[in-house]
Image 1 (cartoon, one colour):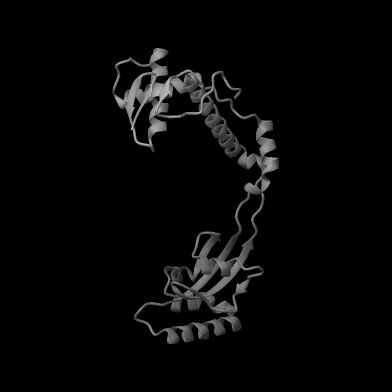
Image 2 (image 1 turned 90 degrees about the vertical axis):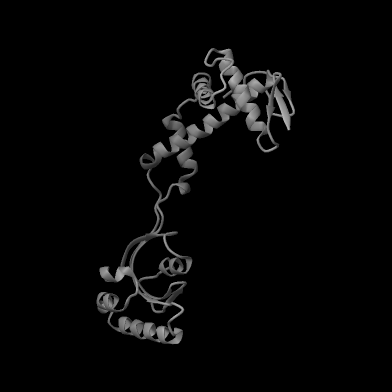
Length: 238
């Protein structure tokens, strides 16, 4: 596929035609304002010139504190710390070499012992668990949503889950005896904690819009063949 920008022919396929046309528009503008020699062909040099061009000609205002605060007020639920639990487990690993009913029976026996005497959890974890956490008495530390496999997560974050859970948890790894020591519900983070994050996000949005508008202005002033770009014949309000 052959396209041209102000008479300069470019070879590009359908997927890259728009990108090639935009890059050529910017290259020609960089030449026009003296940032690049007209006969320069080095890709790195052209890229550097285009970056300088955009830095000089595309103004991106920094979001104000009020703008960040308004965004925060409208999207508070997007800024929460996730639910967390402190948990322990004992893993009875299932492998092709083990006898499944026997492993399940051993796990159920241990679970019944712990439901009667939960204070023995650390000792049984060290003795029975096939997980490296056995060296930490079964302690898994702090776990958030998405940190573990879905079956295990469902048991950890089940509403009201606390203490030694009264049933085995089956996962792809085997049978687990699980103890939930503490649940920490997610909370909305204060504005001061996320202000910089919001400012960065808003600035990125403004920058994207500004770049689109800048390219549209160049396209509106150019002769394009074989490719269509959003064009504007006059500057757009940023």
